[in-house]
Image (tube, rainbow, N blue to C red; front, side, top):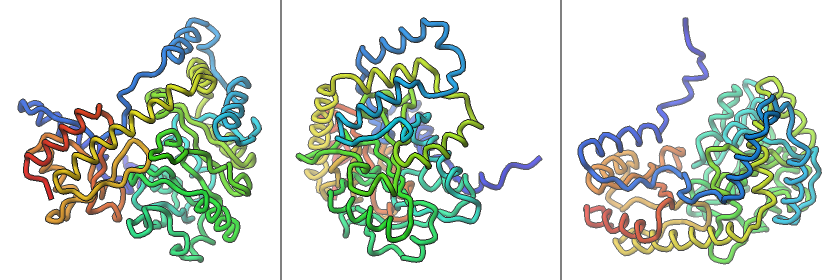
Length: 387
């Protein structure tokens, strides 16, 4: 027996490795502050919980789903109009079991072995991993401080853009915390048209944007519906990460092709989870806004704390993460993270885990109240990791 060569593309999962080291240190009696994984510590609304419980009581909910409920597709369309002022139709929507799974299946829908896919560097690992699963090669374009951690479209090789099956763009961006301007999205649409290139936009953090900026949808920009799709997730806005509630939204032909592939892999999303999604999409959005303000307070507390110990102020314009440059005397982010865990009891994610351009940085998740994040920054300084 042998295992598939596609597994050779994947190293040890960084979060599992960090968790194992954290647990070992806790076993030695050390108290740890874990800022590595972006799991919200806020609770979903009672309305969402009740939707799950009520649907689970119905015996019909336990049968094969086979398709997305019409009420769900209509709820997504209504939400896009209400939240983003974007008109979409049900044939432009399908549910997926989280963006991570959806990204992998979309890669298999769009790319063949030997094809290429444009992927940001640094990026969330599934963007490149999905290409590998499809047998395609990720071609990285850098996100650097020089260009505000945004895609620098003029720097992308025109031939690579012409040859790519699709291009992944994630804004607001995990892990780098950057937020795009309307001008950027307009340039992106023009870039896609010039290179006959499909844009796959990850829109997981549209409700976690700071400093007066407003989150939206890529599909709101003129021409975007012709050149792109986006993954729209409920995970972070409504604190339902474990439920895996996400949607592929955009060009009907891409959605139809994806639905054809997924039909070979499962029998649709569990009906109670579809009911949960409907409850979230039709709920009052005031709590979502309050949560955004809470995240901004956390961002401020941690950024202020790190700056006070001599760190360069992190990039954190949006998402529930901060992208922080290592103090100058450190070069290797993996070594830094291990030393930080052992000496300060603070767990963060090495930037290099997100791609070569991430070296020299760490990602910190805003998953604790402001006072605890301020305490984490103080512990980092007290342990000798100030600049």
